Length: 82
Image (cartoon, rainbow, N blue to C red; front, side, top):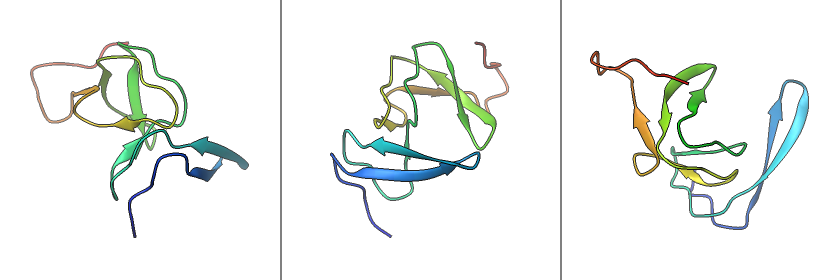
């Protein structure tokens, strides 16, 4: 497996359809990218489960990681809102 370079178009099967996402920045192997625009404060979902809250607006195709996501997983002191 490998990193995904900027400007690459990635096709994903979503609910029986095919969604094409244009990657905006390098995505390291194993990392996440947004498949739709996400507003600051919105829940970020992965495989149908909330993994945290967007700390800024995130555009489709952008890297989703600690620089724009506040994780609520395993903290115990904070519940996700949104």
